[in-house]
Image (tube, rainbow, N blue to C red; front, top):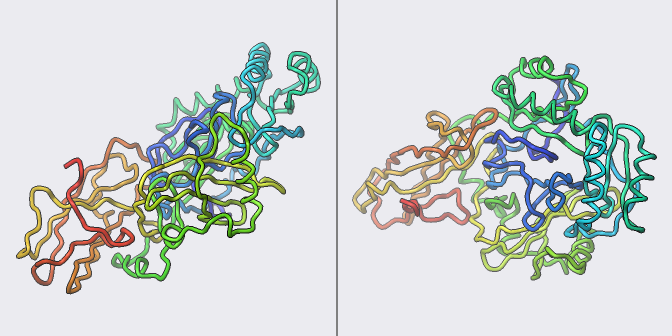
Length: 458
């Protein structure tokens, strides 16, 4: 195995993208092209394949962070890691907010021009890290293309033309070849044209050693880059979740939101109490006119990292809106925003190597006070190819008190990528030391522990 370099999540950004849903990403669609009205992302540039959209991603749409924390390794052969390829970027500063897009007339002119030079055109995107400037890339004649476009575009248009190694047509041919042979690439999780790196990016999770060799045999390696990651091993021994829940301020996740300290949900920290440049960037975005503005309300700071800050509007237990900003040089730029506009069902963040499951009562055998055997149905949340969990199911951990029965489960996620046909439930019997009586039956992975009930859809 190649030397391990760094920790990161499996979220990444593509231009034209094909997805093989990966359990490690915690969602049927871990990477996607989505409307700027509902994005949450780590992307500075927007492919003009759909210019009104931004290719933006957020770790774990399911809110299950631990399986997504993976060790990314550099390939040892001729393939380069995508992170080691410099991004193409504008030298021109735009004048757009993160929620604004250039005028359709501008993008239409550049795209039509690119279509007339298909053999050298290498796509068009919005460089969010440089104020939303439009960037067109060509494989040759950069200055000539710049002059020709300047003659076509209105005066004052904020655009740039940059040099690329490969045309979109060349990259699309490589991408199509990978798609045709994806079944031969064990562990592939996603692939597509990474516009700002001007490569076809291929992501792998837990691939066997021969997989990268196989990829190098299928396609020329120069226009390809890879993200290779290995998930951590699950903890050894019996499942032990209760200490995580009983922590003074447990780390929790909300489905579709990511991980935060529980105190940030129940006692949000107003942006008015925080001195940080990302707060000023948020205020600038709120003041800027846009057809798809940020939600208005009482914004709070959910999480501050070195290069990323997450904000949210919380009304009771409902996350009304969220916005993420990332550092881009000396500035902070909007990298994603949107809902989910639904209650946050907080789950304790599990140890690395484990993922969350749903736990419900078996509707055919509901518990009675005299019962010492409780019948439950447990189902994997993340994409798992419709597998039976079998030995991958961890638990139950059962703690009995005079007032309640606390139950916890987890699962070891599927290795590599997995499709999302829907996962079957596993029937599990929990044995108690004494009759249930009037004690509450609680799922202790929920924060606070919540009653275990019949699945809403039966």
